[in-house]
Length: 527
Image 1: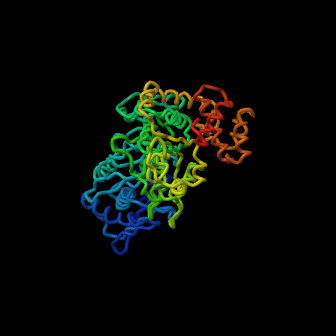
Image 2: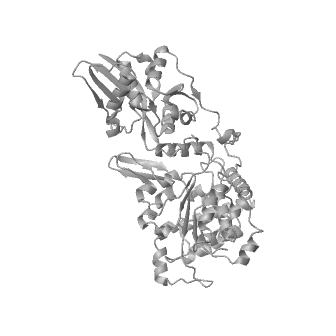
Image 3: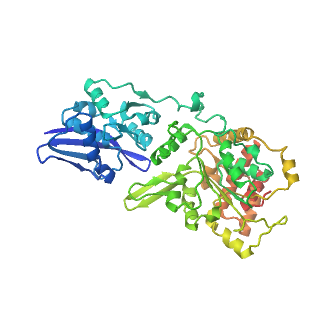
């Protein structure tokens, strides 16, 4: 009887836990038995591992093989355990030294010919493996090597196929490892964007042909977009079609700075689990921009799945932007499912197999027409919708959801004269992004020593103690509180926006001008 052990990682959401893979080759009826709470995809690993070993010209033990995945209480899902199971069986059969496989972590799916195929979730798996101690070695498919190498302090061994791995294990000569860079690699070999403080420096937009200067005739909406980018605030734009709502939302990413190092790792881990990482870039540097169609289900928005829970649009938009065009066309229950992640910055998906929590801190941008026919009601418009129809249409955006929107802007159609006059005031994304970066730097300096980095993250308790504006500045909001036109949650959001406007203006604290402007934006008055 021979027993060999190695290690792998089980992912639940974006959180991994170490799994000890044991293989026992002993007497009994020939066959392979997999225990330890495997799912259907993992149970099929028996056939993949057998074919991969035989086609790689390694003998399949003619004995009873028992493979145990410990701890048995942790669900194991997916095909990423194939390599660890194969290595454990090879160690138990004496094909490779058992002592050589006990320490490293093995991740990857096996093809029937022994090739190692890439799997999802390599980055969060390697992050979890790195927590197991120092001098960790992780063996991954060659296609996942660049992604795995993003984790510092881990020795990453890229492997093309099972036969090559066995040769290296026998010869005690692993291939050249990939060391994690001091900072994430940047596209095109550009210099490091992450300064010593961890804050990113300005970078050109992802799509140079998309620029804020393309939007003409909407100065208030452009200003709201700048405030939104500077403080990570939510935005609702209401107006007839053709006024530039989608155009504005698509240009919001060009105003945001690159993700900081820890945020970039968070976003990359989520996209890795979802299988949404671009093949030519293992690291997500830019804030993601997610725009689901209005036919998307609640599971597509918040995440879900029957056997494997996958992140939804709110998590894919983490540290970025979730844009919902034609928002009233979304089902009401889908829109209301946004309320929890907007408040807590995370979403918990509960299924019969268990609960999974995904991070979901994003900028929500909603766009809506004023009525179903989408025709303007002024300037000679032909809208035939009754007030009841318009009210019923917009009521799909519930009060509790709109209460969580920091700014509400009405976008009207512009005349030819207004368009021509506004052309001399438009600014490029680079110009506005510079002001946004300066405002974020002021907020970050003020929030030094706290877990928050932008004004939108500051909790209510801190807003009304350490970061409370003066009584004179609070006067416009207190009068609205007394009249009932402002809720307690709305008060917090107005104060956060006021701080952002003050940061953009270079002021140390918001005064009555900033709080009045923030209040008008929350009420949708377009100051």
